[in-house]
Length: 265
Length: 329
Image 1: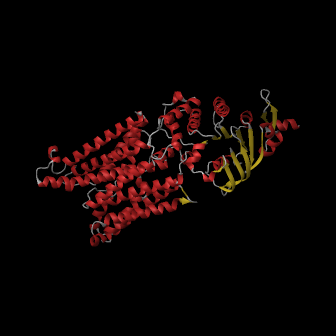
Image 2 (image 1 turned 180 degrees about the vertical axis):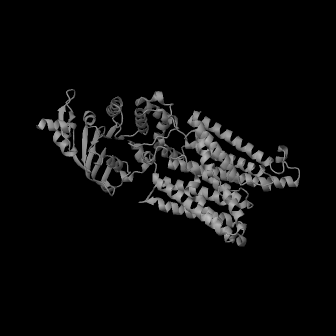
Image 3 (image 1 turned 135 degrees about the vertical axis):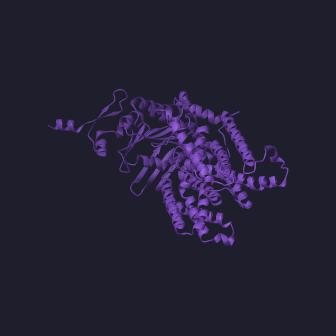
């Protein structure tokens, strides 16, 4: 579905180099890596916010530089980290903004189909009951769901999420990731998700892409990527990796400095 | 039918009605009171003259300028996502002001007539627009925050230049400068009135091409990009549109503050954030507000006349403070 070939892109201060990977249809792929390793830049490259200096990004056989913004927005939706929430707008109207890429030339109002799709997006994300609330009256967790609903209203085939669970409590973290997993399994939505929490990434993703200083360090299943040698090398942190007894996926335990010192004695 | 559309049509009708009533009121009152029954078939020639040669052009100009300033405000506030931006924040009025002052001081208008006022204003406005625009572009991208800062600084520089001109000029020129700075809707040249109306209505129509883009902008530039908007192109076109509208208004009517700030703010409270209705309702409300203010300006101390900018400033500012403090409670 998505293929990235020898991509080089970035800014003056930071460059992504030698990025090559494929995302297959209906896959749930996680992007992990330390702060500043280029996770967000990679997402920005796929949405054409950052132009590639070298290499190609190919979406369903087409070079994305050949697609215009609107065509791209009908295929790929993004839930980004720093969305701005206008205050005096209702949840349902905010979700309807996701229909904009589907508006025809000179179309002024949403059609009934647009309204149905937005309703469906709100039903899937479980926010139908707050649809008449103003955005300023919603909690952080609800806002994240509203953002996802807006992305779903775009009817994307590929969903990109940039740390959708940061700053949320575990209830909302699990709720959002379960939702994404369900969309992925039930509707075959392809998902590329940036996650900070390695354990969540391990539990939910089919494959992981580990970035280090702008380059891909390792791609593979969670048990291939999340070994203690790799994590200690990339994150410069001592960890212990054990299998989760429920699904035999790796689970990472952090080790404090004090603990290390005590053990060494 | 679509509930939203009914709601929007309702608001539009109410506002059209209000503007119409304000227009009639403005035709009736003044230093000569004309009864309502006379408006549609004036009995004598003098009444006819007052209605259609003096009052109507002012009303039309008020309509065009008020509407244009209001949508320029809506567009800029939408672009900056900052409800406190108004057309004059970009320094456009300052640039126009400096050029008009030069026109008065250098007595260019004595040679080429009053038409030089709007031309000088437009040249000044245009110069500032180009300057602000070039200074705010970095690496091919228009930096909105930079635009705001540059605009505010240019405003300061131009008002200092105006003060410099006022300080060194003869006192006979001062009255003209002061009156222009405070804004006035009297415009003897009917061609200019018609042109302003045309540009103002065209501006409204063009702004509607971008109404959905403006909605998308309300969640931020990157989000608008993710919704398939060509952000750079849209930003440029909207900035140019807002600038040209402001430039035309300033050059014809002088500096009329607060319309572009207050009206969009009020309308947002009534009709919501959706630009599909916000643009039209702000246009109508701005038009009505300015015609009303101008009527007050020429009647309050009649037969003398106040600059309309004073009225919009006082009414607008008071209303704004009232609305803000009331909302805080």
